Length: 281
Ligand code: GUN
Figure 1 (cartoon, helix red, strand yellow):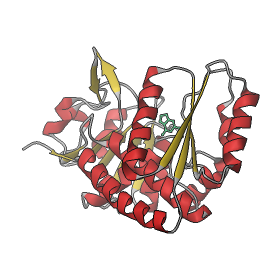
Figure 2 (cartoon, helix red, strand yellow; figure 1 turned 180 degrees about the horizontal axis):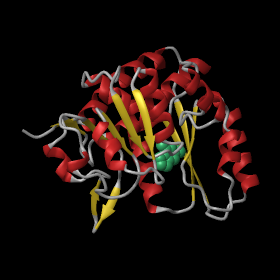
Figure 3 (cartoon, helix red, strand yellow; figure 1 turned 90 degrees about the vertical axis):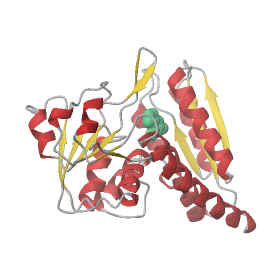
Figure 4 (spheres, protein in one colour; figure 1 turned 135 degrees about the vertical axis):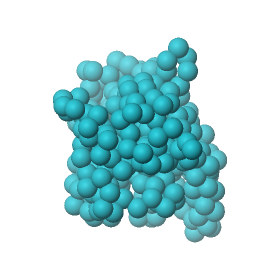
């Protein structure tokens, strides 16, 4: 018997449907949640992500605006734009699409965003709140979406070995914090980890976010484990994850690529924007 697929596309659609109802209610109180997305340059992948975010906002009734800046925009001008958005009462959430061009210091830009509008959860204030276990801030969207997938699939991390492969600020590190708060025993593996396969074999919950196509093999997976594939790799024009297809014969649950984690990231962004609107208004 193969793994059950965790249908992120369907779960994200349910979340958007519930949000739409909530946003209709907020509108009656005169609150229209607003998201500003800042896109620097012309990277096609970033353009695609930003378009998906815009479409999802429109679907649930969030007002969205995209600020597109040329690839050679100065750091000063980018900071000025973020400052303007911080001041704009119609903007409740601000998202600066990453990666930024190399001449821009990403940390400076992230620190410029008002933490109360930082729906990505990347500002150090929100990172601190997350690790402290406070619900005051914002959790980054991809790991928050993964926790929601686990919750809605009745997979309780408590007492489980959770192994996170990848240590990015966007996925790996916040993922570890969220799993820890749900009482998992958490291990973070990365490019310097020795005997990665051995860690994988111990994992009841394996989250893979390394950006290497089909890197994790079925033989490395503990039978019955839950496998969450955050990878979005394009190989010969085909979208594939970081986990090899062979994992499907061994895992208990697995997220497909596409249609697993991706739609959940956007759903959580919408949720965070509504939370921001409610807190600010
Ligand atoms: N680039 C890749 N993922 C993300 C994300 O979640 N937020 C932002 N701002 N940029 C990204």
